[in-house]
Length: 156
Image 1 (spheres, rainbow, N blue to C red):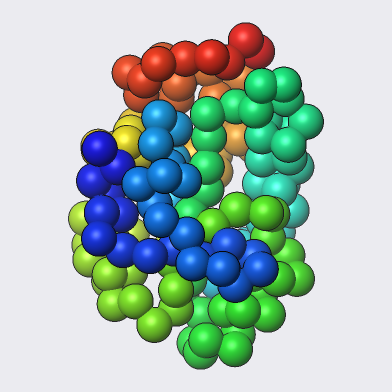
Image 2: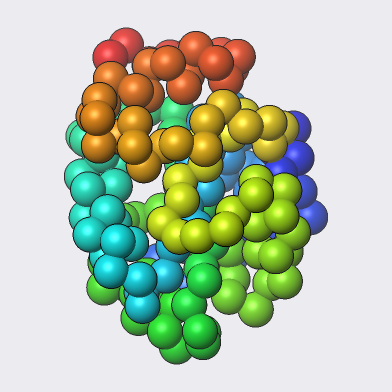
């Protein structure tokens, strides 16, 4: 059902390989196009960390939300450093996976940072995730969840 990353392997912050089918099932997914060399990215990433922590790590049950970082860094070392130093405890597409180019085309990514919120099947809910988080904080998650048409256990 998680068609957007079907057949791919994702990474967690420990460097473990993660099956997207399992990790993203029944969740709203934020695809975070970002890079460590980009000042607006370095400005927004801590805000996204707080948002993710409140929704996923501090909610009981955790919100049905996951982020996948898609790097525009210039090297794998740059990506790893940025991911480990600044990002939350979410997932990433390996830097070596050329699927990032397909994702950028699919969601018309012309600049970073960009947070695209998608349904399980990859259909876009909004490509203005960054602006919505800045403007509305946690309240925007409820509208994403309603649009995602998934089984909800979220009480917030």
